[in-house]
Image 1 (cartoon, rainbow, N blue to C red):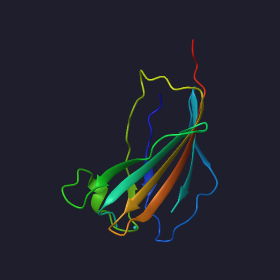
Image 2 (cartoon, rainbow, N blue to C red):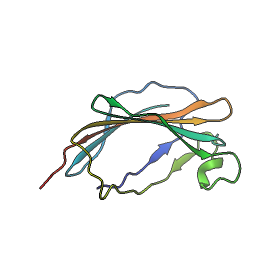
Image 3 (tube, rainbow, N blue to C red):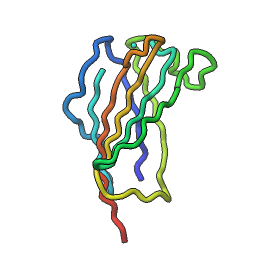
Image 4 (cartoon, helix red, strand yellow):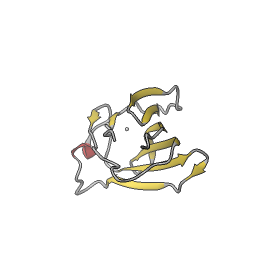
Length: 130
């Protein structure tokens, strides 16, 4: 499987709706596309939404920055700073069904819970089963 590179740039405080999809990469068994919507990072969490074809999975919330004792160096980034981080992972040993996966990631920041950014990934999986 291919590693996922998470690159996010902090946008201005203006919220934007998801727009056209942009191609990230292809591998022998998947195509990955994204679109984005678009403050200081003190408290940050992600809402993760996943759907497979027409099946919706429960929303998952991941807290990244709590405001104190944070393990990530970007947790105190100021508005306008670029944050570039990568998260390698592998699904080796897990078999995914052929189909279209839609994965929406919303980054929510601050006490007022304002949207920092939103990424909409589309992965079209076509496994090569021998």
